[in-house]
Image 1 (tube, rainbow, N blue to C red):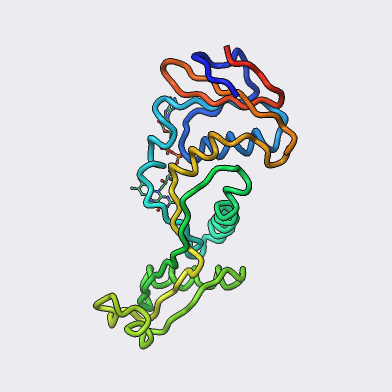
Image 2: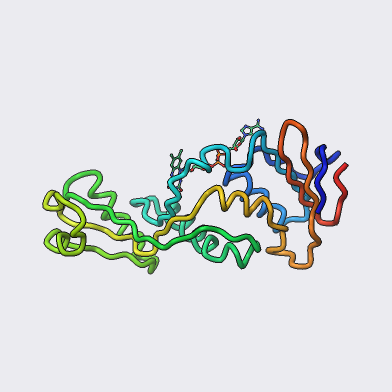
Length: 202
Ligand SMILES: Cc1cc2nc3c(=O)[nH]c(=O)nc-3n(C[C@H](O)[C@H](O)[C@H](O)COP(=O)(O)OP(=O)(O)OC[C@H]3O[C@@H](n4cnc5c(N)ncnc54)[C@H](O)[C@@H]3O)c2cc1C
């Protein structure tokens, strides 16, 4: 790995933006293809929405089952992030609860999310209204709700940590024998360049 003031002369893929999307795309492209991948960031990795995220990792997306599937896959990757990438990441398990009222749009969303998780054996608990005061004694006003749905394996994980982890990690996921890859920096942007063979940034 080397640091330099300029971008590479050529690259197979150029990813613009070092948020969680760009860094993850660059990481997986580098790890699972033979293309050279360069990531450019105009400010700092995680400088955009990624740095403002509330860090909630949940699986509950109402009846949007594809989001549940994507979130579950992604969360499993977060759990193995350090083992996979060699980069530490802040991660703390924390169930996420939704309180629902029957006959409302929000209630239907919560109930549909329960069913989507249950069908996939993703841990989820349904609490009837009369169970809520004992289950959640820290909250007032629970008599307004008919039920609650707890996404039991939700968590918090820091987006900036993850974006930086992706941007620093060598793309060893699919190709464990890949050599360490070069960095390059330009005056107006930060660029990370991965190559399938060592390449000196000039
Ligand atoms: C307050 C808040 C709370 C949130 N809470 C959660 C949450 O709890 N859970 C959750 O899953 N999601 C949450 N989100 C949403 C999540 O943070 C975003 O969906 C996600 O971070 C978007 O990532 P991104 O990589 O697409 O964008 P960004 O993180 O914004 O990254 C874009 C990057 O591109 C760079 N860039 C832009 N233009 C150029 C250019 N021309 N050249 C080079 N670089 C450029 C920017 O500097 C930036 O770093 C939250 C968002 C906010 C704002």
